[in-house]
Length: 212
Image (cartoon, rainbow, N blue to C red):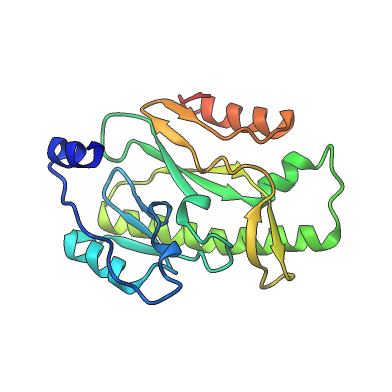
């Protein structure tokens, strides 16, 4: 059994899924829990209290940030934040941050988005930016001297409603934040269009990564 083998190999703790109120189960998926190399936990604000308490009991109570995922349809933190490793030390990493403003800029030469779409992207940029600021402050507080770069990844969202409170948002193309990172190799979902594909590849290559 793969799970049992990994638990033994890594010296991990195997836990049964915590019991949660109805509706919290999807929010407790693995994509809603991220840990940075220096030890800060990113946990979606919609994650259930039993899951949060399980992680806090494992040492993350003072080393976590609750990320605003309320506007997302799936509601997972890895739709907004990820990271790539840039060196051997715990602080040698760069944050990958979903940026609807950058997504608009990348799309601009080929697409003329309507006014509502632009308003929604700018509202989401502000919400994601607030979480990014809270995360960077937490990293500095938890690990003084650790100031990783934040790389703006072009992403746009299709949402219900309008600014300032869009809801049920999903990325308009496969989300490059849902990447698999294998040391310096980053396996990214293909957005299906050449312009965003090359923009993402350039961003990763500029910081020592090999995109696939």
